[in-house]
Length: 310
Ligand SMILES: Nc1ncnc2c1ncn2[C@@H]1O[C@H](COP(=O)(O)OP(=O)(O)OP(=O)(O)O)[C@@H](O)[C@H]1O
Image (tube, rainbow, N blue to C red; front, side):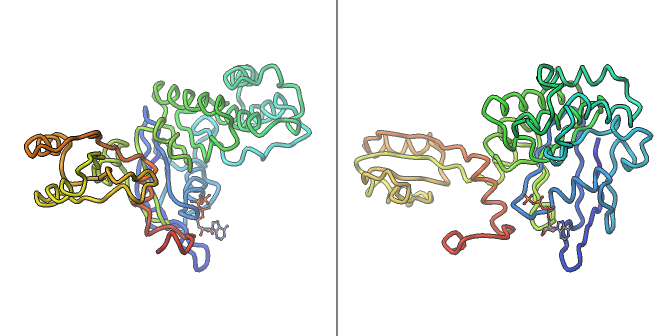
């Protein structure tokens, strides 16, 4: 369990992390999201004891990481996968890590197998692809068999097979009762992987919620309607209180498409039937995490193009 209470970090004028409160629970994968510069890496570094908070606390298993006798047994971390001595083999990198933490040599073989690097373990890590280095970083995180994992952008540089692999690994780690915290900008992946979301923007907590509730809370449920009588039907829908726009802006407009909010598909269908309107499509559209995320963090994005901001 990770507990973050009143966590704050100031770098001169920049309040990188501003009074954050959240928990990462065992048995769940928690996605840690936010636009660039939101304070995700800074928060993770403070959880791992690599940066000191200006105020507040971050504990793992009830105490700061530095107070655990063997930190690697308390929490495994992936921060920067390129931070490996390039002349050293994966095996020797992990062996050194195990030795300095008093972990048995057998753990090295176990984690190499776990991440699929056994066959290349004697090669210098400098010859590894980005994906292989990412796997090596994960192996290091798993070395102490910790109950808590903190993974900063673990999907970076992975090919589709690697992404599926790490998704399964994280799900399995959570199923074994571990607390898994991962940051990512790949919303479609986050949507498939995480149980809970902690969203930050400009250092502050924006949301701490279950995945389904998050999407529902931001989503205005839309229904796409296609009918050759689009104009009069739009008028009828508006008359019963729905918000209606045409699909003209969506790039596939043939004059028959409407996007309706504020009315369920069943009621739209009933209204069409009652007024003799011929429907060619009636499709509720679930908001994706990506759309929900962009909606929620719109005001916290540091860098936008003028067109986006308009
Ligand atoms: N060592 C530092 N000195 C000064 N400012 C810093 C330092 N580290 C981070 N910051 C600032 O703190 C803020 C948060 O940065 P952080 O790297 O934690 O964000 P992030 O959410 O991880 O971003 P990204 O998604 O781009 O990795 C940014 O404004 C950043 O410029």
